[in-house]
Structure formats: structure tokens, C-alpha cells
Length: 429
Image (cartoon, rainbow, N blue to C red):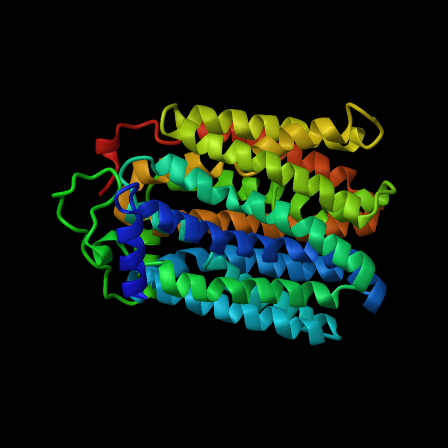
């Protein structure tokens, strides 16, 4: 693998830093993770029809998935520090591929909870935002916001690439070919990650992007137990108020994106007479807009006050969600307007949150502490996915869940203004 990466570095080294190759490969891994994460939203209605499961039963699997997806983040970051980034990513992709393929044989609800809840949740937790933060921390000194924005946009691109295709497969062939298609996509990424994703710039004899050529090469990772690394960073973080502001604002971020819209929007469209392909196409359009919005957010986070950026992101998202129940009754000014505002804002919160985490805790601890913040994001997503399913079963509509989600976003908009208000020198090392 190192020989292949060295050869690639020689081919591209005269034009640009290999850090951008690492970003491209990480983008691909995170893209397939995002496509996998989006798959259950396409299968929700077909599984109800095939097995007679109600919305809450399927939502429980999504809730388990989202919770473990987040809780794995800090331990995945610590495992990358202890065992290596490449080893951790390859192991996670192998488990993910096997778990998805096995789910084509499921017949009972507990099997979905196990495979799509536990197995897929844990595996995708190691190949998502925490992976992006780790790669940016290891490879970049300059342009960190832009690099994180590009990597975060992989989630939107995953929706854009996968959702319409998967919805079409469901409509014409059922849900089982969908899971086999996703498993095949994961299998394709495995050898690319093996061949072209180095551990650190030092492995190729390179400084970090933005450092001078004669800068000392980065030191290897810690040899401590990854569980000790993860909890040690958490122990330092919980004493700082900014950690809790980051954690609970990202809890709301997860509740209002992956947990609610990402899991229930296609089913919500069905309540208003739109089929799965139409709902998936709207999500894909929002994904295309988020590709622009999140990349731009990364660029902005290198140049402007990140607290102010988060205030506007959360505030506009909250207003868009409060508007959503009325959007289905309008034509030109209905769903297109919602898709425009919500799509540009979907996960634009990630680059400023990563930047603030790094500013508060330093580049060494930031990936692991951001992993704990991501755990908050996914706990919020799990909470929203399950609660929205329960409210839909009880009330016959998603309106109450939508209004609650929008209100939480408005609260988060004011919460983030308090992050990192103290001088950096006052923050514990």
C-alpha cells in the first residue's frame, strides 16, 4: 500500500499536496457511509408492507443505528490513534459490507434491529464525521475549514447519488436488491482505501498542508488503550462549559437532520400523496444544495466568526422546519422553497463546529472530543427518529414532530452564541 501511495504522491506532488488525495479518498469512504445511512428511509414503507411492521418498529432500528453511529465516534477516533486510521477504516468497511449483505435474509424485526441497528450503526460510526475530523487534523494546518466542508458535503452527495437510484430499485424490484446494491458499493471502496489512504503525511515524507517543507514530521499516534484515550479526552472536556454547549447544540442538529428529515421525510411525503421516488428526488435535490452549502460553510469558517455562522444556520433551519407542514399545500412556493433553504443548511453546521472544537481544545484532542460531540448529534438523531415515529403512529401526522424540531433549532441558534467567549489562554490545556 505504501508503495502505491508513494508512487501516487510522486505523480501528483509537483502539482498539489497529497493531502488533497487523502481528502478525495476520505470523501469516497464517507460518501458510501452516507448512502448506507440513507438506505433505511427508502425501505421504511416497503418493510411495513412486506412484514406488517408498523412505523415505530422500523423507527426503533433507525434509532438504535443513529445512537450507536454517534457513540462509536470517540472510540473510533481513539482507535485510529492507537491502531491506525487505515486499519480502523478497513475493519469498519468490512463489517459494514457483511452486515448489509446479511440483512437481505432478514425475516423478523429483531434481525433488523441487530443488523441495521447495531452492526450498521457501529460500522458507519467509524467512517463518518469523526473520520473526516481526524483526516483534517492529521493532514492540514491551513485550509482546515475548506477541507472539512468538502468532507462533510459527502453526506449530501451520498444522498444525491444513492437515494433516487435506491428508491427506483425499491419501486420496481423490492427492498432486497437495495441492500445488495449498497453492500456492493461498500465492497468497491475497500480496495481503494487499502491502496491509497496513508496513515499520516510523515508516512510519505511530507509535512502537513500549510507547513513549510522543512517542518518536523508529525509524531506517530499514542500507544495507549483506545478506550482510555477516549475517556481521558472526555474527562478533560466535561470540565469545560463550551463542551456542553457544543454537545447540546449538536444534539439538536442531529435531531433536526438525520433523525427527523433524513429518516422520515420520504414517509412524510407519502402522507401527502407523493410516492417514494418523488420523496427521494426532493431529498436528493436538498443533497445537491447541501453539497454547495456545506462546502461554502467550510470556506466561510476559515474567514468569519464561527459562532455567528452557527447562529444563522440553526435559525434559518428552524424557520424552514416550522414552514414545512404548510409547504405541502402550496405549489410553487411550497416544497421548492423548503428544499432550497433547508438543503443549503442541511449540515452546514459541521465545519464551524469542528473549528470551534479545535479552537477550544487544541488540534491533538479535537478529533476525539469532536467524536463525543458527534455522539450528542447522533443521540439527538436517535431521539428524533423514534419520537417522530411514535408521534406519527399516535396522531396520524408528522406536524407536531416538525414543529418541535423547528423550535429546538431556534433555541440552538441562541445557545451557540455563548461558545468560546473566553480568551483561549483561559481554557485548560
